Amino acid sequence: MRPFRLRSVSDLNTADEPEATRTERHASWAELFFDLVAVAGVAALAHVLGPEHCLVTGVVATVAVSLSLVVKHGSDPLPDQGRWLLCGAVAAYFTLGVVTGVASHSSDLQRTISRVITGIVVPLLLGLFATGVAGRTLVVCLALVVLAHLWFERRLAPAQPHV
Image (tube, rainbow, N blue to C red; front, side):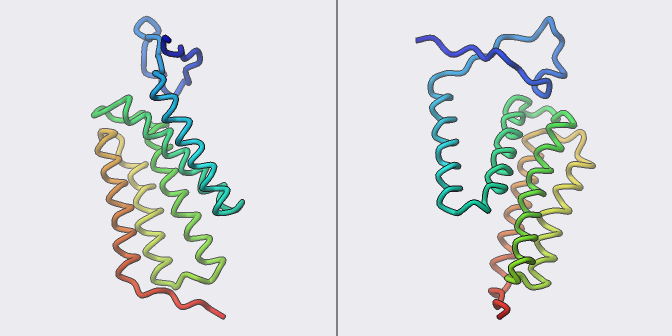
């Protein structure tokens, strides 16, 4: 069997390519199988966690799409749209966590501030100022943001539920 031909290409992936140098893209069976497993896994996780987690699923899918741009561009800087998509998706993920924690009264002030700083402010600043940064470097910076968030969460004592 031969690989599938990808017939539609988004403007985001080819905006910086001249028409003459655009090549036809192919997807192997292994890539398609991996995509199917990833989609099924995210859908199953959303079903188990409940309907309120559909926003988190959407944000995770957005991060996955923007990571494909990093793979495409490698050590080159991402286009502005790709950089903002990646940084905005990480900030949106943490924004959902902050809103959920505040709405459920399960987050104290210190925890909320650490989530806002590590999860929202830093990715948005990276989106604004990391214009010439390589895509891989941007992913490492955002991974450090997630690790910093996890470090803050482990250092803070568990939040006492408000009754």
